[in-house]
Length: 137
Image (cartoon, rainbow, N blue to C red; front, top):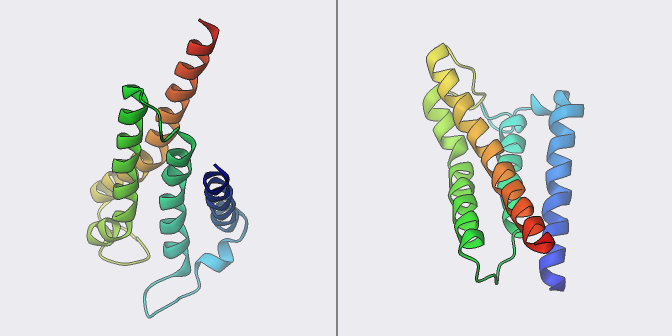
């Protein structure tokens, strides 16, 4: 139980650091790590992986409830999509800075990124609501 809480805390801490860098230190994001690989890409990528991972860790693991198992499987899929997000984004944009010349592909990228962000939140909220309903009734 202690290890799970430590994992949740560390995941949340690193998620907050990533979000803090993205929103409050945009000048850091333009630093080039390699020839055409900006630091912002790495920070965004790690943050997108940590977000569904954080919600995954919050859902009870040893629960026999099929709804929680399906919720965890859904978030596992989203974690996988977050892991391949950078490579997918590179193939869509043609560069590691994700500067799009084709606006249609940009909308695909926005939808893909939005899916990674929104689905874990929705799944976690439904798990919370379901748990609250079970406690009340």
